[in-house]
Length: 118
Image (cartoon, rainbow, N blue to C red; front, side):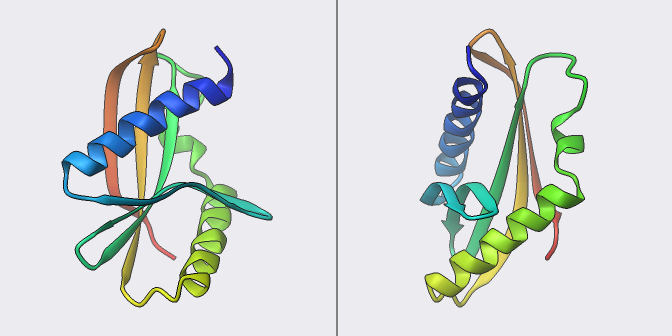
């Protein structure tokens, strides 16, 4: 399985989790030069910019560790672009979803709300 296929499984799982919890998915894999946001969702008057990290069991680097300073800077840059382009006027938060995968089955899931701030 490719890295992209593994990532897609984690993103699909996270999108379903968000929808079950009352979020509307506004965009997936929103990309600009120099940045990407895996999922952009809205619940009420809050926009959630969600970074999804999918890992096999016992990874060298955990999903939380993979969201480092450089990654956060890219996500914030991309979020600012999205907000300007879409003329968003509401609260925004940055969340991280960590998905553990065994073969093609999700065996662990952790959703961290407000994982970092801009």
